Image (cartoon, rainbow, N blue to C red; front, side):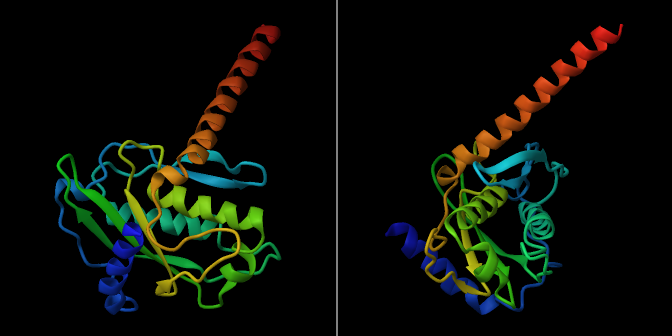
Length: 214
């Protein structure tokens, strides 16, 4: 309930700016707005495990959090949402509307508000339909923007809007309110560890093959 109330407050203060957001505006360059030296990842969808093939997403350590989220959103739009399974192009893209800091004794908690722009509503017809497909989309969105494998995560909470409003009720997933990293952490970590394990095994096989040739 507290999460939903907080999400509603953030939404009410964000909606006046939807549609007139300008990415050229510069956020204050304080330490809480710079991502620092962290390992970011992007993912591929997987029918069984939702996420797989975790690939490093390299950004400068001095980049602002808003810019990092913007680039992650662009990558997600290009590599996951650009086409439907019927090979039709979409116009789905993301706008980082705001990042709120909530003061705590240990560190500020960062809540990002991201707007999913989908004028043709392709996501409702293709990406949020079906149990497996909807859950994969949920994990792709949440893991990409929050980077839950990190401690602390890239953002501590994500409010995802759909064409400027709270997402309507969906059959298989819930994207209303504030999403938290813990809800997707195990899936993201499994994808990262799986990719690393494959790399190690592949390297071992290469060493064995090279030894045989010698």
